[in-house]
Image (cartoon, rainbow, N blue to C red; front, side):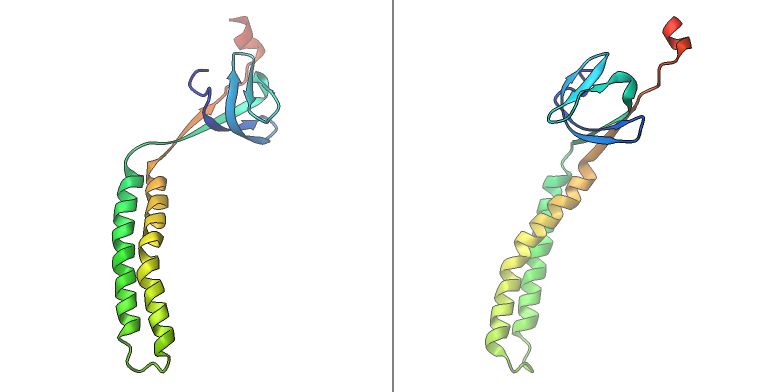
Length: 136
């Protein structure tokens, strides 16, 4: 059970209840999550282990930041260049918000898209013990 000890998991019981948390203890008889009741081994139907690996978050931040910055600047230029507007002061404020907000918005969006790309889910399905398997 060293595979899951200390990891963030979702445990599904045979009754269908789901428990999320970090594995505090795991042995042949039961599984214990932090801030959750101890789950006996025969009650565990499935363990989902979610991990994030790879460079998707870093690449996502770089691309998202670049696109956000470029999009913010283009939006600012489009708003600022509008000669037909009768609200020039408001347009300057909107252009400033677009220019400043594009980069952080792109960074955050890129990070979360990259995180989706990095997400790896390991599903451990527990085979129920029967009288036949106990005799062997």
